[in-house]
Structure formats: C-alpha cells, structure tokens
Image (cartoon, rainbow, N blue to C red; front, side, top):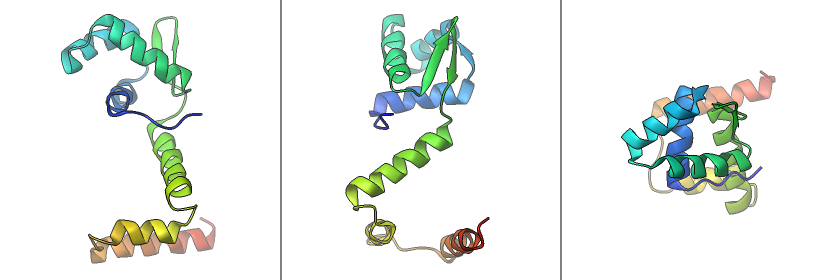
Length: 120
C-alpha cells in the first residue's frame, strides 16, 4: 500500500476518519463546506484514496480499510526506513537536535521502552 499522501489528501482522509462510515452524498456536502470542492473533486480524491487502499466506497457508504492510527504508524515506520536507514536512534537524534525533551516526554519514552522490554 502506498503510504504517501499530499496535504489535500491528508485533510480529506482525516475528515473521513472523523466521520466514517459516512454516506458519500454527505461527504460531498462536507467537502463543499469545508474545502469549497465540487462534487467531482470530492469523488476524484476519494477514488485516489480508495486506490491506495485507505478507504472503500460501497453502495454509497465510505468506510476506512485502515484506521488513522494504523496509517500514521505505518507512515512513520516508512519515514524512519527511508530517511534514516531504519535507525530509530538516528531518527531521535535528528528529531531532538533543535528541540530537546521535557522531563514529562522523557518519562513517557522511558515508560514505552520499559513496556517494550517486558513484552507488553
């Protein structure tokens, strides 16, 4: 499955994930209000996201094939693989290079690592 989405596709996908399952006619109305899209634009973007395996439009009802959290988890793994040669430490080093961690964030990460080590 292709995990790359442009900014427009991502906003549209988020709208579907917030409301799914959603009637395609209702989706057209929401897109007209929120994005000022025509009906044809909504269906074109929906078709592209269906081709990517994120959503399905069956009998006029749009639903997710992959939930938002699963999509973003897969996308994050792909970024680490592509940009940091799969090295999570290299990713963290790049991410933290100009921002640092709060004590609360550091504790949350320690908790995640401890849970991983325990197999939870």
